[in-house]
Image (cartoon, rainbow, N blue to C red; front, side, top):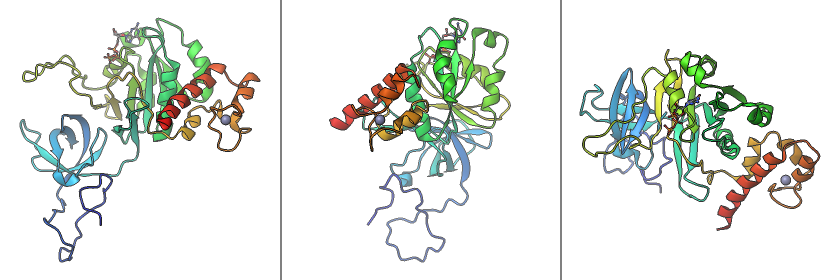
Amino acid sequence: MRRYGKNPDEDDVRVRPNRKGNRPRTSIRPKHEDAAEGMVLTVDRGRLTVLVDDREVVAMKARELGRKSAVVGDRVAVVGDLSGAKDTLARIVRVEERSSVLRRTADDTDPYERVVVANADQLAIVTALADPEPRPRMIDRCLVAAYDAGLDPLLVLTKSDLAPAEPLLETYGALDLDYVVTSKEDFLTGGVEQIRQRLEGRATAFVGHSGVGKTTLVNALVERQRTTGHVNAVTGRGRHTTTSALALPLRDDSGWVIDTPGVRSFGLAHIDPSRVIHAFPDLEPGTEECPRACSHDEPDCALDAWVAAGHAEPARLDSLRRLLATRERREGD
Ligand SMILES: Nc1nc2c(ncn2[C@@H]2O[C@H](COP(=O)(O)OP(=O)(O)OP(=O)(O)O)[C@@H](O)[C@H]2O)c(=O)[nH]1
Ligand SMILES: [Zn+2]
């Protein structure tokens, strides 16, 4: 029999209204009928900041949650001191069902997947057009992650004052993918409207490499600036002490921006290789002639002929194959 609290997926264990039940138990778990609902804004070494009404309450997981984690974006039930006053600590007694889960692994061989953000509905993939150079393969990875998590991808191309967007858009503009292009000028003139429109009423997770201008963009969009360079007096550690994402409300409270820490890679070890092709809608029609259960990374794959016939760019097939190859190496070892 299952032991309560040991199964991380056991979300639905509740105490029955009638306590006269004869289930053996060592302790009676409270019902938490009086628990308040909140949303996790950030996580830092076991301490979660939860927005309850308009207060930021610091909380930790109640033991009864077992190994189940709460992540940024999670809707949670909290009990205890909900005043938000300094040095108070509330308890998270329940994590509500998630509408979406954005996951990644550290790299493609890492068996340990982590949930980056819960309940987002859009993934903004931030890429600079120069400084640093755009990396289409990273974009493709993020697209795979977005499709897998059921998030609508939004491509955000920054620094168009340094390089034109056209070369990248030749590829990604054709994918029926929503995109925006921003430049330094946009920030000087407050012209981030085109992106703000797309964030309205939604929870958008922002991902991108360090240096692409993600922080600049996020700060232009949100009410309260992300605090950086804040040195902790006790640990002496400076910025980036937290590896968590951070949810920030949009200026007019019309949506959420979820800033995620810059990552070098977006590991996809958790994604079934057969699903990778869905992030390549320009190539997908070319798989109709493939043998059954084609991995699209084998000699009989129909994509080679299809791309050779000019239906899609060779670079796109190359990107797909590289993604599949890193995935297969993992399967092999
Ligand atoms: N030319 C130009 N520079 C920009 C633009 N947006 C941001 N930058 C600059 O790019 C550098 C990196 O910007 P950040 O916003 O710190 O980038 P980030 O992606 O948040 O990087 P991390 O903070 O390291 O994660 C800064 O020097 C910005 O001033 C832009 O549109 N054009
Ligand atoms: Zn194939």
